[in-house]
Amino acid sequence: MRSAQSGMNIPAISLLLPTRGRSELVIRLFKSIINTVNSLNNIEIILYVDDDDHNSHHLHSDVIHVIKIIGPSKSMGDYNRICFERSRGHIILLANDDMMMRTPGWDARLIELDNRFPDKVYLGYGDDLLKRKGLCTFPILSRRTCELLVEPYPSAYQGAFIDVHLFDIFKRLQHAGLDRTCYLNDVIFEHMHFRAGKAPADATYLRRGRFIDDPTFISLANTRSRAAQRLIDTIQGKSPVPFQSQHVIIQTPRQLSAAIIYFAKQFLFDHGLPFCWRWFLWCWFAGRLLAARGLLRPFVR
Image 1: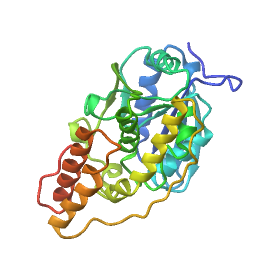
Image 2 (image 1 turned 60 degrees about the horizontal axis):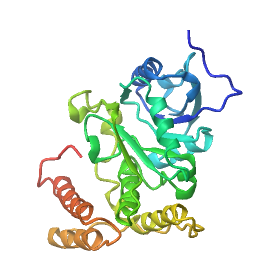
Image 3 (image 1 turned 90 degrees about the horizontal axis):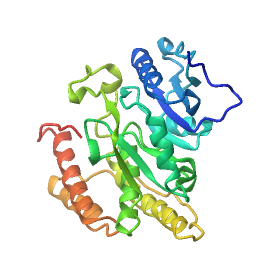
């Protein structure tokens, strides 16, 4: 029988896990972790539960080391920031309550990934069986990378885009000739998302504004550029530039043609990114705008 981690040990991997109204999914996730890790001593879970979500306050594990935080409802960025501040592992996995670990020994694979880079600058992710290689749905960062980014999980994000935000930063490294994005295609963290037909559209899904974070992502482009430069400087053995997070959220123009032009200026002319990623962002945001205005059927992303 594997026992819970002693408080004297420092785990290798910290899973940041905000949850609301999904105690049964959290228990399912715990079971999938227990059934697949090589060593439970490698793992800790930092669980954030809203103070008014009384049905989730009982969540715990006699097998996995869980640090439970009960507090007020916050943005998704703040949830993860608070969880990160309480974590101890040198590998940080941004988890969801609607994920399941499918690959035996995935903890060893994450430790191998971390050991691959002496400077500890990387973005890893597994196969979520939904977006697959196309997006780091459950991003894996070293603690050192999180510290260099200063705000790896920006508080401004209410419920989405943190994965895209991190992916964009590492696309900038890729464009600079320093590709540190690592897709672990043999590590499956299945995303049991309702848009994949794997779950009902519950209250937690539906309470999130589908398009509320679009302007925030656009407004943080300069922050991502500066964050990428800090990582580049570190890889090249230089002192990182001072970090600044300055953004003013500008709402998308109401007129459709003006909005499309606005997206073109924001994305297509961002020369710190590979052109294929710029083109994708322009098309994606244009499609999201049409979906938000009821002119196009919403799509999976």
